[in-house]
Length: 136
View 1: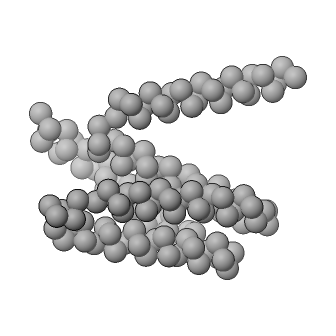
View 2: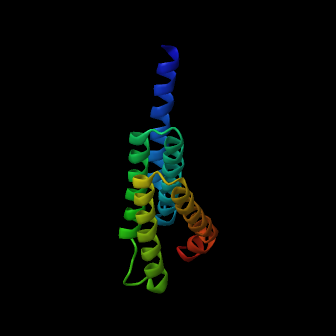
């Protein structure tokens, strides 16, 4: 019983910390958090796939797709030029691969998309200094 109460308290604290981080985040940081969230959901989905837990797999893959599609929808295609076009195409590909992974229980497809998202995430972190300098 004590463990359950402590676990609930920890979850509540975690949710509050995430909410505060989101409220205080720059647009650049928000995208970084979305990417990290998609990576996390893919990792959880992968675990469920290994456990043959269909509902957990589907829920987490759907969540990852939703995050990716949110990032895709937020692209500034009018001002983003070739980068925005390429990211749009890549996000579309990633969503499609995750859908296929869900249907076919394809761990390799999840790994592929996770690797792609890690690459984008790392690059996004790498430009943080440039973004912060240009916003001053």
